[in-house]
View (cartoon, helix red, strand yellow):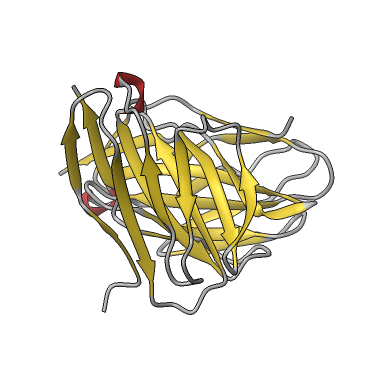
Length: 112
Length: 113
């Protein structure tokens, strides 16, 4: 029933590890996104995919690699995690071109 | 580059008080403007939008008018409720790249009974 779902909800891991966050949307949207929200609630776009094709890559370190196996899924893999990667990561989807974004509930990543 | 500036929070109000959260923007071209709301533990939800100058977006008693002359999109509500307590984000979509939303830093609203 959930429109945009992401897993896990919480992720606690140590520096240097590799982790993935999964996202799925059942809205039939063509465009999916990853946003990062820091501890001050500042929200910044990381990636945008349209129909499995990378559209936006906002100077994110190449330790972050998005993967879109089909247009309903956009997963985020992070290599060699660092303390500064601790944040809430939000997946979102939209029809594009001024249509509203639908957000998942976020994944709180804590790197220790 | 394009940017959005919001008033710092938290904004603390009593129930039934009048709310204004200021938002100004810097953009080339003709961006669309949005307000999103984030309730605790949840993702952001679209609250309202305006796509051209002088448009007024409204939803759930909230309103915002797209003012090109002052590059502003202030959020207002005449009588807030405790359930309105949340973080509010102003955002713009760049007119040449409408898949990209640029968000302000968010303003936390706390409403007390």
